[in-house]
Length: 124
Image (cartoon, rainbow, N blue to C red; front, side, top):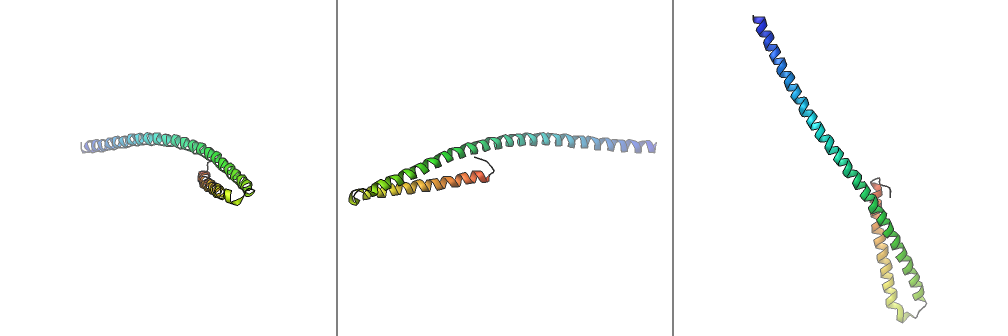
């Protein structure tokens, strides 16, 4: 009889352990599913972010080309102004020079942004 009681106790403890392990497995599965969903969402956000960065980079490149064009036009205008009498064009020369300088500064800032995007491994 004692042996029977002892076996019953062992079986009862084993059953409790199995139930505990099953509960742990169920919790693990639930947590795993939750984390998998989060990873899928994060991946989607990352893909959308990469696409947005690529598009922004292309737009920035377009603006950089416009800045180059402005610089070239300013240089051409400066050449034309050199042919005119100094007194009358001094103000224009200064303005054209300032505009060319601003275009160059803006172009340099935008070039740095494109470099940042490229450093993330996103081709533009």
